[in-house]
Length: 390
Ligand SMILES: [Zn+2]
Ligand SMILES: [Zn+2]
Image (cartoon, rainbow, N blue to C red; front, side, top):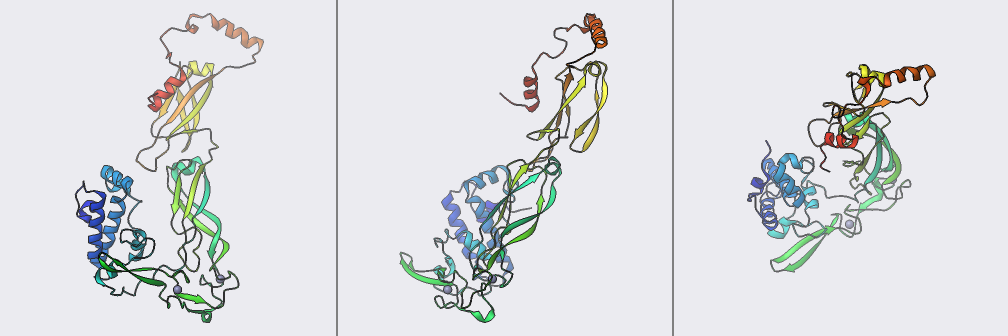
């Protein structure tokens, strides 16, 4: 059972944005890893608070959380903080370090140095990559694992991303003396505040390259191709997007890779028409079969299915196959398949056929009986099936 985000931040459900920010700041400082070295419990609490804050500080996410609880924000928060550095990167602003890395611990406690175990972000983050993936009706109905090849910037195979010709051509950055950050002390009403920002010369690597790699000219990336396995869940719709973290372009100089944004394009080449979560199939039978009833095969997403047309079925009749439609990626349950019956009216008939029909034409059973069959138009009834208001 996941803990309530409001409880984690020790605020009430009606707390203002400002109160939430203050509460988070307090907890983040209390459980800051530098003050709790090696304390796993504190680290958990630190991460937990970051996740809670991520949701509650975002009006949209908070609203969803209030309405649906954890289910409302699942997949949008939590679990993606690899380490505490990520948390600082994400919430730089709350700790006051506009853009750069601001170390709240240093600011509050006057320059105690950070624990050395964690590496600062190196290099520049790779650019997100957008691709389109075509899916069939079957793919969106059942989900699929797809292996795709993506052309993009990958880590340079010659230098493994360092950008240097060899190990001996990497030296300390003289601007930051190898730390990757430059410190700035400024006077504020709270006293002296020390902020750190990424070194502009080495982009935070702490290194300078004397001889560049000949393949990538020092960038650490080259143009290449990567095979990526996409796990596509069932229930996606045309135009939806999936984001795969870290599968975009490689970062420069060993920086983290960007994300891969996959846009879904549904290519439906079946006779089933997609209408939201429902599928519509137009079934055409001849006049005699509609009158006498018949057994036919209809396509469904699970393959061919036997379907019985009852005797005396009027044209335009809609049958519903419950639960034979599409699933939804956001909820349980599936849509339905609707079968709309059409009666085929031949354009050309033989003299003999004409004679038979003329014989039937005046037979009393063949004259329409007012009110016996639905008089409502086709579109009215379709609307009724989809529960539309208009
Ligand atoms: Zn290289
Ligand atoms: Zn530097």
